[in-house]
Length: 118
Length: 221
Image 1 (tube, rainbow over the protein chains, first blue to last red):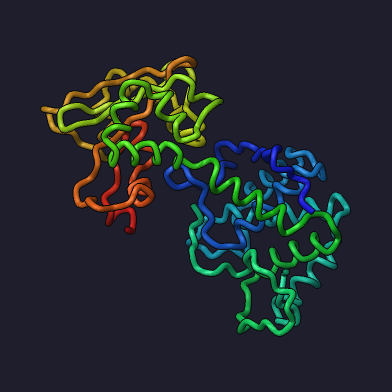
Image 2 (cartoon, one colour):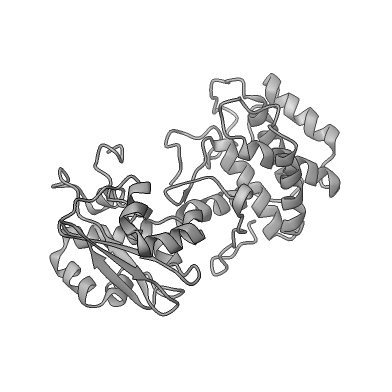
């Protein structure tokens, strides 16, 4: 069950300058569904108290400083690629997931052995 | 507003029915990674699909400039509403259910063929969040704040908006007590459009005064 009650609207953390969420005309922009899922997961775990926002932010800054993400196509903005990289690292650092189970599961989706997320 | 309208790769519908097959398309590396993350986190009861859906919806729907756009669209189609908006901005906006936070004192500024309005916060970065969402980065920049007062036409040019010499430009300085909302002119070729469609033409920039409302073509309608 979601722990976000109807009366309690979740607060989306503010992100500024190089970390600012991509927007078009003031509205948030997701270029693909995976980007919104990644966004939702990172904020969801934070609002549920799994980590302080700054822990994620720090890894995001590191990832962005480290240059472009290997998975990102050259001509695409790689903002959410960095989100996924930073989030993966954070989960492993916090002991929520292991690198091995994450990579294994990713291969299951890549090979088609697993197809449904729901 | 989501950038995609077609069926999401994994959407909010239920896939528990084992007989419900989709043709499988190989995901990209990043898609597979994100699916791996979501499926593992849900399995471990760290979060739920619903919680993720909720946050995405809040982010997409509650922070954009659409509340202000609905006010503008209504004033375009309903002359009585327009008159009320002119007389009492705060009251007319509250009629649509947008209250609280920083919309207490809102004055609507109506653009016309002879007058163009634009607002700025020269002292800090006062902004009607409830109506327009998150302020754009440039709104808080010292360059915009300083230059729009002394050279509004130059600033508008920077935004790609060139006004004829006959148009008078009015610059308004917003404050903690007084907020503004520019009502841009209704674009031509929009007769018969619904309020919801019209609202899509009203951009954040148009409501600050650094742009005009979009044509139906520009809005992809």
